[in-house]
Length: 271
Image (cartoon, rainbow, N blue to C red; front, side, top):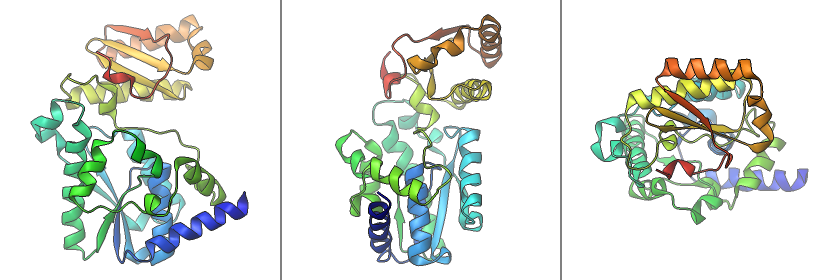
């Protein structure tokens, strides 16, 4: 297993050696972290820049986590926080199934300008081969900007990414997927900074209480908590439930519900 992970990582590094100077779209997740690490090893840190798009759709915890990850890798000096303005686009705010296309278009527009200003050759993202089999509007945006996907080019699926990240002792090798906060809002419900702030506060509160692997789905004045069934005992304590209810009320929710269907990716599209 160790030898296989070593060979897989070597293949990724060799892939990136042909990129020249690269700006990596860095979300703070394990996929883009592996790309950042491999790009630094392949090209030298001075030829790699990790750029994180910052807007209302990125929770503060995720932003802080991205910063800490690169600090742990001694690459904090190669990290930029770039403001993105997808909220200015009514097509993004409309929150239709192609929302991610408009979000990524804004991100790649900003990264393309950054690359041109600072003489980088290309932009790379953290897409892996598993992403090719799913509906990913953001991947269409990447094509429009000639964004390269080194994990795809090197043939790495999500399981390969986890294995190599563990082999390299990356600090977030087992970090759960954390899509942007807008993914908690049903399609067709307009996305705005106030809603995203509500969701971010609610999820941060539950995380601080010790809950993991969950989502807070936004339905107007109802917050629907999706958690893995084996963590439902977390809600058995009456005092904890009262704390959650009062906190969520302070965030702007009138009602708090636990979804008996459990946590499922993409369930926010249900109206």
